[in-house]
Amino acid sequence: MARLEALGNEKVRAQNAKNGAGENQFGVKMGDLRVLAKEIKVNPALARELWATGNIDAQCLAILLMKPKEIPAEELETMVRGVTYHWLADWLNSYVVKQHPEKEALRQKWMSESHPSLARSAWSLTCERIEKSPEGLELGALLDRIEKEMGEAHELPKWTMNFSLIYLGLKHPALRDRAIAIGEKVGAYRDYPTSKGCISPFAPIAIVEMAKTQR
Image (cartoon, helix red, strand yellow):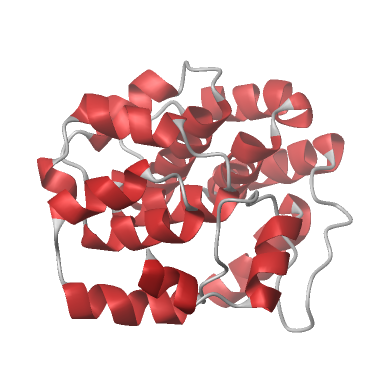
């Protein structure tokens, strides 16, 4: 923790706070966290201690030190449930949840959960299924649910729900027109600030632009 504090950066801390990270953080750059994780190497016991601090930087480092396959599903659910900062949620989803052997069972369970963090993870896993292994998914039903729920959804699951909508339209051309229509109707991220050269997360724009690249 002392090393993490020494690596803290005021600008990063301020940016994290602006994005909802809260007070319990040092503002360590992601690159510095990766260097430290490479030095320490995988260490599940230390990872649990770091996670228990509730400090954002310590928890990000903990994620890089975990062995996803050895984490009990119940413990993983508790971890996901406790995350409120979107960047941390995405690291946990990418490096741990998506590598877990029970991720499909967890996806199905969490798709019926109202808890924002569990729902964000569920839709992130669903987006991965839509893109890579859609067999067995009821794609039309997913569109129905997105159309019904996304407009009033909590910001945490709204983001990954939106990307599920994008990939439904992108990877499944027969659904493209309806996905675009739903995006227009819901209007999520229509005015999202987008840097030059990047694609807007507004689904109607993202689907069309990403489809051009895909071709």
